[in-house]
Length: 166
Image (cartoon, rainbow, N blue to C red; front, side, top):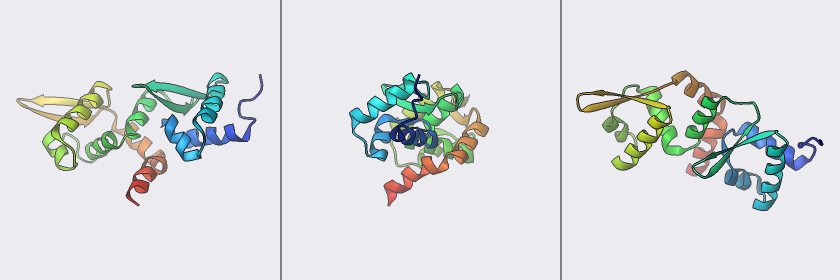
């Protein structure tokens, strides 16, 4: 079998995925300025050639280099690539054991939106909740993993935030 990375464009796509693990198909397409069909053709060849892995999450494809990440790391990177969940994780890394009302004070979102994200994060195993009487407090299940991924991939995670601001 021919090396799937022999073509310069495939190498460029691969390098982008390697530097931005968990990136969505459309993000790759926009970031590299490629046509959808062109990217689809090359990505499928790399998946078939077992160079990259395509993970489907709620109908969206996320890409990773093959054998580069554990299941927990993929789950964490998927969360960290989304703005509101990433913000909640950052908040809880700094202020473990916070209540939803305290978390809500730090964001410009509705209570319903926060509840939605907290439920999803808890269901995915990223957060754990403790209930005391009528109040709930949230913590990150694996703060070391989340912290190390944030540090390791900070340029690809936060460059997008900075680009939105500027």
